[in-house]
Image 1 (spheres, rainbow, N blue to C red):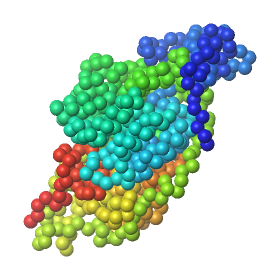
Image 2 (cartoon, rainbow, N blue to C red; image 1 turned 90 degrees about the vertical axis):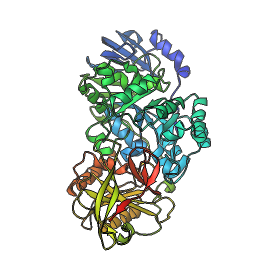
Image 3 (tube, rainbow, N blue to C red; image 1 turned 120 degrees about the vertical axis):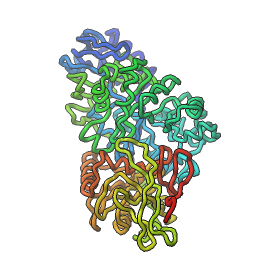
Image 4 (spheres, rainbow, N blue to C red; image 1 turned 180 degrees about the vertical axis):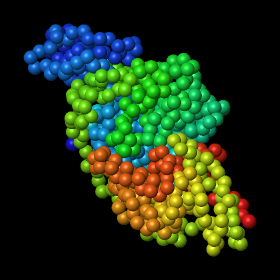
Amino acid sequence: MEHIPFPSWPDVAADLIAVATGRTPAQTVIKGGKWVNVHTREVLDNHDIAITHGRIACVVPDAGYCSGPNTEVIEAKGRYMIPGLCDAHMHIESGMLTPAEFARAVIPHGTTSMFTDPHEIANVLGLEGVRMMHDEALLQPVNIFTQMPSCAPSAPGMETTGFEISPEDVAEAMGWPGIVGLGEMMNFPGVSNADPKMLAEIAATQAAGKTVGGHYASPDLGPAFAGYVAGGPADDHEGTCEADAIARMRQGMRAMIRLGSAWYDVQSQITAITEKGLDSRNMILCTDDCHSGTLVNEGHMNRVVRHAIDCGCDPLVALQMATINTATHFGLEREIGSLTPGRRADVILTSDLKTLPVEYVIARGKTVAVNGEIAVDCPHYNWPETARQTVNMARDLTANDFGIDAPKGANAVTANVIGVVENQAPTKALQFELPVTEGRVQATGEVCQIALVERHQATGGVVNAFVSGFGYEGQMAMASTVAHDSHHMIVVGTDADNMAMAANRLREVGGGITVFKDGTELALVDLPIAGLMSDSPARDVAAKAEAMMDAMRACGCTLNNAYMQHSLLALVVIPELRISDLGLVDVRTFEFKPVIETHT
C-alpha cells in the first residue's frame, strides 16, 4: 500500500480560513464539549471544534455558523475534549508487535502520536530494517514519527551486532519523510569523550534541524554528565530519582519520565514538579518499553497520565506532559499536541480528567476508536523473507554448550553475578560463592545460569555466566531472541539440558520467547519478524505473552514483569553488570569482568 502524505498546513490553509470565517462548511464538528486548553492550562465549557482536511479550523463557543447540511456532527455531550496523547519515547518492538498492530492496540487508549526509536530492528537488520519500520509507520491512521537509531552497537567494543549504524546512515535517513530526529544516544561515554562517530551523527541530525534523543544511564552528575549535555542530546529518559530530573531540566534538557511495563520512574521524579515546584513544561511523560499484555490489559499513555495524577500531579499538568510538552520538544507544536487552529485534529472525548476513560478517539479528523474498540484499518507492510529469517545458528546446541568449567582442583568459586532489580532497568554487580561438581561450577539457590547465544552470523558462540533475582526453582530454562540491544539470544535456566532445548526451539521457529520445565515446553511466543515482532493481532500476542509469564511463575519467578528484566540482561549501556557475546561487562567502567573471580 502506498503512503499518501497527510496534507500540510500550506496545502489547506485557505480552506481552514474559509471554514473558520463561515464562508465554507466544516467537514466535521465536535459539538458541545469542555475544551481542555493545554496552552493556557484551563477548561472552557460549551465549545465546538470545526474540522476540515483532518485539521482544526477553529474552536469556538458555537460552530453553527460553519456547519452545513453535509457536516458530520459528533456530539461531545458535555465531555472533556483533550488532545490526543503523545508517547515521547518508545520502542515499538518492545510490544512484540509490528507498527500496524501496535497502532491497532494503542489507538483505543487515545494515543494518536508516537515518537519511536526502532533501534532493536536496527541491530538485527540495519538501515534496511529501520526503513521497513518507517514505511509501515507512515501507513497508519495516526502519527508515528520515527527517530533514526544512533547506536548500533550501543557500546562499540563491548558487543557485536548484526549490523552497524554509521553517520552516513544517519545523514541518509534524515531525508526520509517520517524521520523526526536521532534516537537515544546510548553511547554516553562516547559523547562525553567526544567520539568522532557519535558527534558526526549528532551533527547530521542538527544540520537537518531535528531533535537529538538522549540516554544518560549513569548516576554520575559531574563532569561526565556536563560533557554529555554539551554534546547535544536534548532529552533523557534514564533518570530514576528526583535529582536526576532536576539536573536534566536545569541543564536545558527535557526530563522524560517513564512508566512502561517494568520501568516505574514517574513517582520518584515527578516530585520535582509536585513538591519542588519547577516548571512543568520541561518534563515529559513516556513509556519507553511496553509489552503487548500491558497494552491490551492496562493501557498505554492513558495509563501513564493516570499514574502521574495518582502521584499527585494536577490533571491538566499531567496532560500537558503527554501532549503539548512533547510536541514542543520535537518542533511540532504547530502540528500536534493541542486543540487549536491549524493543528491535526487529534481529539479524545472523556467524561473525567482524573480517571481518564477514553470514550471516543478522533485522529486527523476521523473517528478511529469508540469505547475501546478500534474503528479503522491499520495497514500492514509486506515484510520480506529476509526479515523473517534472522535466527542464524550454526547448529543445534547441547547441554555441554552451557557448562562453566571451574579452575583445575577447585571445590568452590567466587563468581561475579548479575543481580536483577525489580521494576528498574539497572542491575547490581554481585558476588556469590558457588560449588563445583565434576569440574563445573553449579548454579544454586537464588543463582541461575545465563547464556548469550550468538544468532546473527552463525558463529556458534555461547557466552556463559550467572544471574540472580528471578527465583527460579526446579529444572527449567527460558530463552528469548529479544535481547536488548544487540538481540542475540539470552537463555536463563537452572538446568543445561532445558537451556539447550529452549535455544534450539527458538532456532526452529525463527525467534521469540519460550519457557521449558522438566523437558517440556510450557509456553511459546513466536516472533518471526527479526526475532522481535509478530504481525498477528495484539490480543493474540498478548495471550501468548500472558501464558509465557504464567509459565515463568510456574517456574518460581514472582518478579513484576520479569520478562522485561530478562530481555535487558545484555543491555551493555545500563549499569552495573551485563552479558554480551564478548563476555561479562561491567558497565560502570566499560571493562570485561571474569565470571569466576577467585576459587578455593
